[in-house]
Length: 417
Length: 218
Figure 1 (tube, each protein chain N blue to C red):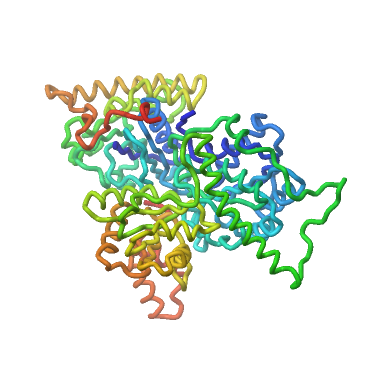
Figure 2 (spheres, rainbow over the protein chains, first blue to last red):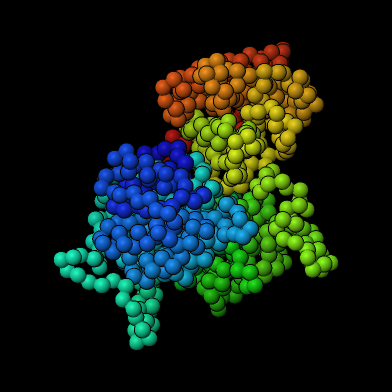
């Protein structure tokens, strides 16, 4: 049924339809509405046979999910930003143990300086943790990806993270076609664990592994990701057949045929980029865009095929590796190796800065002229940066940079406009 | 595409107003996208929320810089926030106030160039009268339905009933209908002999809402 819903509410209901047996989460913006929604479903009895466990931290939340999953329960959590960092050790444990926990990551910047707004720093911080990382472009896709995530996770016994842009998606109210319980039950079979803690048949999970076998265990984690690379498109097409709409998959191209400039991006910014592509196409530019649906595993071969005859690949990413540049751009560069295309990185939308169509169009026009630098910061206020650098050069005790910059722009409190 | 920006203060239901407007548009068969300004909202602090309404799916995720419609839930913001940033001469502006536009010192507002484009409605008073509470958000949407025509008053009432229950729903619905009538009268009055100055942008004029196709595509 098509409903006008807040993204968080839609995801909460979708997770409920997947019949998790244990939900354990600690609230943090912008994830809060999701777990509030699931909590309400459990309390009202609408979500049956599910225990919602309150804990004191994200570290405990993931630890409970690990325990629940190892005991054979379908386990779910959600977090964002610092919360993800706080549970980091357990995040690695979930994947290292091969436990199919599903987690929503309501993407948010990482401090300091503290910032509650959206970017992809949190997802990038765990990109090597061994989790599958799927990115939603819309709230419809966020809903659909959760249904696919439980099936993928449990088939392969691997944890899956569904990334959705904090606030931009979690707090956006838009039309979402909500699946029915019957549809989801048919698509997500009951959880049949590959390993389970059972007093009747005792086993150990989480043994210490020394140099004699650690590399093999890690290699198996890579093999599992490669299996996911095959299963993700298969599950997406099974979803499409069952639910009547395309959703998920490794990646999706938009107007890439004959494109000389191809943008690559993750998440909700793809919508604004598609509008920019349409504008540029109307003006005669050969521009297209590829949305990466699966960031981990990274679909190198599929991306390489999609890049086709691109001369310039512009990776627009909401994250920065200070001292290196782009993060997604590195994976794209590897995928494009050997192609006759230059890869450019555009860092954009950090800490919730709006990514506007006007700025995207300008940068893509520059890329079309061959003038885009290899690492570009969208809408960066160079003047502000120069002022702070000058302060630092003038005297040793120049003070805290963030506060200095806020004073320069005359902001009384963060986010005030 | 018709884009609305709503200004108010934390606690006045600014985000809820944007959501209700989107639900009303949805009920009318349009596509709609509502979202807050993503600030750390605190009671009393200036808050902004947005709503886009279109005949087709809405892809953009950027904030609304140049709104076609502006709703101001708290007139004291006039002295605190640059409410009219990006508001062009064709925009429709509805301000919650028991005073008139001239009394508020807005007579030279660019938006006034469109006669009947800037109006006030005593939404807080109407809310108090009908609900016993001073929340102007849902009431203003009734007025905005009259000013803009982008959503119907019936759809606004349906959206209110979707969101609220019992007396709160019915009180807000009644107050929204009063605000609709109030603004419709005010618009007719300020129009004088001119024909239909406060009507919605005509379909196909480039700025307004095309005839919805959602029912056909959904």
